[in-house]
Image (cartoon, rainbow, N blue to C red; front, side):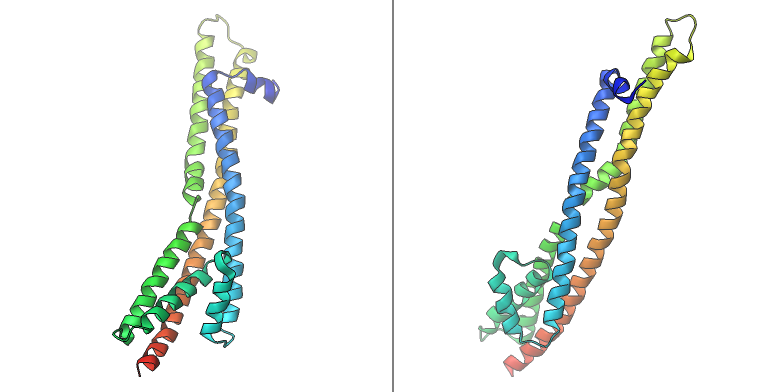
Amino acid sequence: MSYAHLILNASLVVQLVMVILLLASIMSWTFIFRKWKTLGKAKRSADDFEKRFWSGGDLGAIYKQVQLKGKSTYGMENIFEAGFKEFARLRKQSSAGAMDLLQGAQRAMRVAQAREMDELENHLSFLATVGSTSPYVGLFGTVWGIMNSFRALGNIEQATLSLVAPGIAEALIATAIGLFAAIPAVVAYNRFANHVERLDNRYDTFADEFSTILQRYAHEAKA
């Protein structure tokens, strides 16, 4: 009645269910650690950039600092770089009005923000799927195992607890593994989804505030 003995002697279908759930759990924990690292990096990057941006420094100097970082830029820095780059490009065109400058920068920032959000939301759907389906997959393995146990008892004249217990126990392990896979995935998904939403709100706020600054620059440039 050891766990290893029960798993090794379970039916093929139940063993397959256990393997699927274990693989789902391993992948979930892998994505959990990756997402935790990614979101932490995005938050720290946003905090550091906002401090530099609102310290009163020149926007051109900040833009050059961001460019020097190359591909190591992240989150809010990419949104700022995209908006300021498009603004500077359009400002060189004499035919572009103040509103054209502002709308072009806003479009560039929206595209950059969409890319950042796509990166932050990556793998969240997998965690949601594991969290919602793993208990049912484990339940399927349990039902299958119990069904086989009762079918085997049909050929026995006198059923005892010692005959029923191993089959039911090995079947219930599938449910336990399903819960083991589902609970961390659900908790991680809810926590990460909240962090992603808060970062999205910060990006929206920054884009609006930066648009206000660019609007003033646009009118000064055309004047």
